Image 1 (cartoon, rainbow, N blue to C red):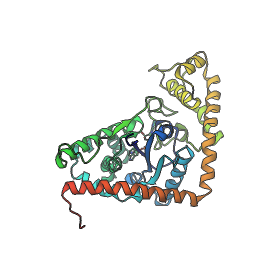
Image 2: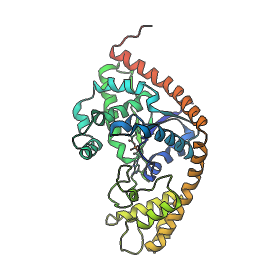
Image 3: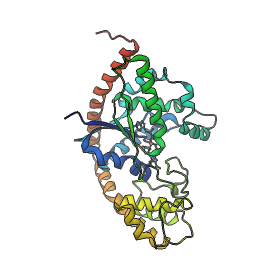
Image 4: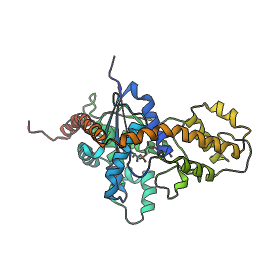
Length: 337
Ligand code: TYM
């Protein structure tokens, strides 16, 4: 039997994890984990590409690591680590920066969107963010990268960088960097805001009512669903472009209840919002409760969490260093040994 496929992904420790992050990414990491070798990290270097508060960066990093475990990542299959603990991420970023054309980065949709929001105060890091992301992936020679739809363009850029690097620096039949494939599940890849079904659910939306966070209390969840945007039409249906909120809320119900699309379509076809909203509320609270309980347990044992991250760092560093050495050799850096 060949080696297991290597899976790599990460989330930024900026703000609370919401249902989009969970259903678009983390849940998929957990589901497939026993079939692959998984490297899942907390992207704390990406978190400083927008203005950040040093006092909360470390707290958010720990809290996110605890959430990874609470969501079901199993250390028998998955290595969990913090991006900034493995210095090879920064080093490879510099090397790849020097072969990445500026206009590739200027074309990135997320850069354009975030740059507009920041006005004149845009740091170089925001532009360079996708090269750091490419380095994260390539250091581990990942086969698959499970992410939500919004990361697709960054994955395409990563593949372009691989092709360019191998073309310039590798021998024809011996690529140095591996071409990764994005893993974007159709269901859950784009969870939309609760206040506007045409916008994705996002940590940076100023309105708390727009998203449900994994650590929201039952009262908060109830309030957010009660106040979420709907429409005046009776009978709930999927896939009607005129009813983006309806499609999003039915999808949430489907994913959180574990029912199939056909089952949900049949169950809800004659419902009004007054009947559906309490059902979605109950389902969401029930689905998140075990994650929240486990999170509290893990957070109560800081020593355990630190040891998980220490082990993770060691394993990650071993692999990352090997790739970095190969990349440097290919680029003409000789090592003094
Ligand atoms: P981040 O922290 O913005 O989001 C983490 C993951 O959640 C997914 N996601 C969504 N999925 C569905 N619906 C939504 N509304 C939604 N919002 C977010 C994202 O697609 C992502 O999978 N750059 C990355 C972190 C990163 C990374 C990497 C990922 C850094 N290096 C290497 C993979 C591989 C980011 O900012 O994700």
